[in-house]
Length: 297
Image 1 (cartoon, helix red, strand yellow):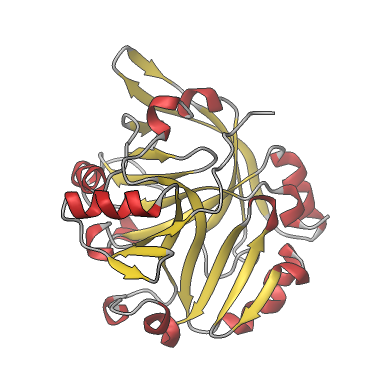
Image 2 (image 1 turned 180 degrees about the horizontal axis):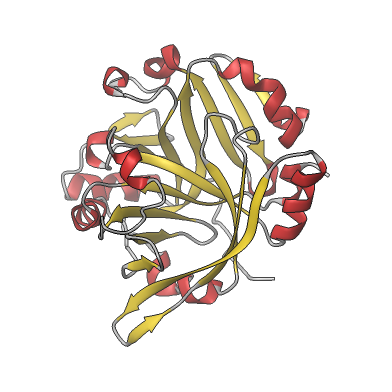
């Protein structure tokens, strides 16, 4: 069984930030609604999540440098930005078995809990996490997540956003030679899922119509005019991500009202610059439909 056949698309992506509370205020200004703060048990990190009907963003920062930060301190030495992302699996053991059958070293599935600080007392969302060697998604930091208590974090009060954001459409990475990775990605995602187009490679996650896009470093400014790739200290990095917008005109109206700078790209997309979003470019794309809510199996 292909690795990708055990997955249910992208679960969430992580943005590593220097100052977590400042990042929270930045994203509030952009029109996002954030969950209360979460603390990772046993680590010196905390997060705020931005929930959509079927996936989410995670802003993660260091709140206690005396504890293990799971590599976040090293990442932040080269600046804020996209730290990585998680695929969703409803059966992490099946996913683990698919990788073991291919001879891929794995770690897990392991249980994880974090503390979510609610006004009426703390609660503890539970997860299963599966990690694996870099050969599965070369040049991208990924893992697999299975939510055991989705009802705790997918609450109606957190899912709606004034900017109209409604879910993750695409995650975009820059790297030296994406074409040299076609065979690796085909092995784990299937040859039909790896599409070579003009200047980029798209890895299609058909389960939820999501895409991973790989750009050659020299092509970044053709796809994202104005992006300052010269300042990037990493050989490969997440440029940013595209979100579905429920109503792009309403998204634009929100940005105009609150003086959020954006670049309009035709009639189908608005793009925020990385300086406004903690090192990542966020694009809002016109949605063809409304995403269905996440229903635990």
